[in-house]
Length: 227
Image (cartoon, rainbow, N blue to C red; front, side, top):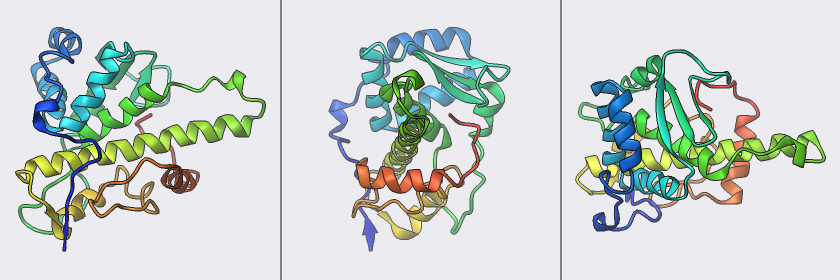
């Protein structure tokens, strides 16, 4: 049985935002501030996933993403990758660590998940959703629930972007269940997404049912290095 991993809204290659146009402000600034390896890692992730490129391009067009910043120390938040207003920030150490896949492998030639793509897609969802203002919630529980729902959406979007890359790596051909195993078992998200429902294509729909299932899992997980 094959999983046809065509992500929702992936569209034709001609519809993909080009790095040189929609993402030009981000690319130009990153080229000036990041090392060549850091630049290649981040821009390469956007090139490898048409879906992620569209997400980032949309954020740039809306003014919700103005910079991807590489820093040497953690910021004011207890994360090593986070968003602040219209900026994505990664510590250099955290970004480098994403090059190494630390999950299980099953067969020679497995298609491994691209963790840089996952992190960018996850944070892109946070920027698109915005940060909830605790002052606007009459109860703390309501604020916590909204925050968890946004976090759940980040997990789902990041996972779907990783699957999108896997499809590109497989020359657009459907992934077999064997090929999909390392992606689904990625330590970054396997526990959080364990209860979510896969579509026949292998994606996870961003719907209230799946968000609720991921929120349920998140309540029992420790905080990660990624916002």
